[in-house]
Image (cartoon, rainbow, N blue to C red):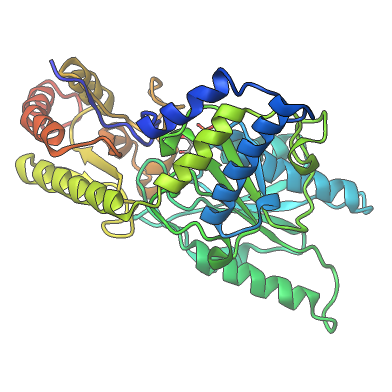
Amino acid sequence: MPKIYLDYAATAPVRPQIKEKILLYFSEKFGNPSSIHSFGREARKAIDEARENVAKFLNCQPEEVIFTSGGTESDNLAIKGIVKNQQSTISNQQFIPHIITSKIEHHAVLHTCEQLEKEKMAQVTYLDVDKTGCVNPQDIKKAIKKNTVLVSIMYANNETGTIQPIREIGKIIEKTNKQRTNPLNPKPYHPILFHTDAVQAAGYLNCDTKYLHVDLLSLSGHKLGAVKGIGALFVKKGTPIKPQIIGGEHEYKKRAGTENVPGIVALGEAVKLAQNIGEKDQVKKLRNYLEKQITGKIPDVQLNGHPKNRVPHILNLNFKYVEGESILLNLDLKGVAASSGSACTSGSLEPSHVIMAMYKDPLRTHGSIRFSLGWKTNKKELDYVIKVLPGIIKKLRKISPYGKK
Ligand code: PLP
């Protein structure tokens, strides 16, 4: 039986070039980058090079790149770091920072915001999205309050792939901040910072932080074919942020702890390789092929997400009258790995908060599955899926508890 992996949005296999490069950092070049001897200096040099690569990828200064343990930590650092810093610097005891985010964010953002709310450390507005999963930038404008300190909107959604208008939102926030600093209208003034979770966008969309007008941007290594346990947070120079892991003076005093040198080297390589345009085009072609074949061969299939404005590697489909988990189990029996949503919620039968926010229909969440492609995916693998999937759906619809069979 073949083993076909179509769950790249959960994690990607490590690219061979990266695997080869990082092995050295587990053996000969094992030094602690904080040590001043030659072993330490060798590790430090590797980190410096990787940081430069990531900085180039984000069009920022190397000092604006903070290495973390992954996308989750980057999101936590961005949100808690900004909110907790605001609280400690604003003397007014009544001041509760306000965050604007959306209902379709990854749990790394949503649960962090919810926790801050529970602890009475922040007020949060969770914006709705339209049926394509898109946030309306005008809703952000309307949601801004005097105490708004942070807007956190993801660049591309991990379940549907829908791309958010980050540049447009960034410009709105910049304009609002300028008006707030207008000497004729000075008070109350709390600059609004803009964070985007670019974990699913990196490698496919332009992550130039200046072009996007963002102050903070999260990356994760393992989605890019680097290893698990490494990520980065772009923190624009001058952004007031409170470290969330306390210890030594690593990462420009923003994230303590001995650096994950092999992981950092891997991320540095991954962002270089991610700029391969040919590979992106190939992934898009393959994704479109899979979509066309499935929707052509199986009746009552609907796309979840924006038909065009979508990252090339994600395809989220709703199969009416069937249970998504059953499709996944049957695909798995045939050797095909896909997903019913984000990795953290798969395995539970909780309806996807993303699909719910888009359609407000639990049935739609139940029959939805995500195929996600990547650097190793080929047409032969997709042809196999296209061959086995119609039979699986037909069989499941016959025994379906969801209305029409
Ligand atoms: N943000 C998004 C959009 C994601 O898709 C993920 C992982 O699925 C994360 C954050 C968390 O990243 P990590 O697995 O590196 O912690």
